[in-house]
Image 1 (spheres, rainbow, N blue to C red):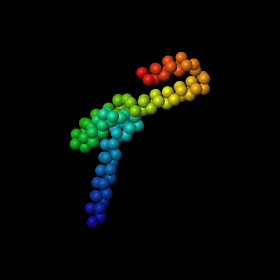
Image 2 (cartoon, helix red, strand yellow):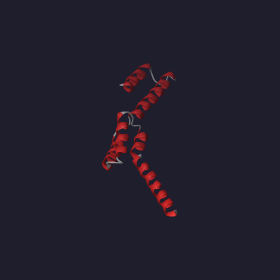
Image 3 (cartoon, rainbow, N blue to C red):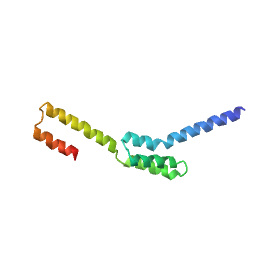
Image 4 (cartoon, rainbow, N blue to C red):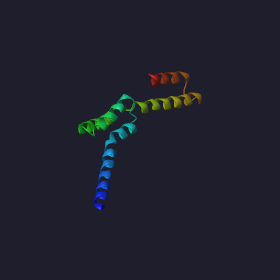
Length: 106
């Protein structure tokens, strides 16, 4: 009876470790701000790694190569807010504000 319980504990531990390893590309994608269809592709490829191990490596590479658009959009919003504050505090002129604003929005 004790041997069966010990085998169950070992198998449970191995399943948890394998699931954690499968989630590594997904965690990297989240940390890098990857969203949309790229994130979906990484998730699908990562979980397909259960059946086809090579897809996990593809998901890992893609999570390291693709750039996160979600973070960049937020970053531009922060820059625009800082720029607006500079203009309101009269630290920059209206012309400078408009020029920098058009750069951020394009």
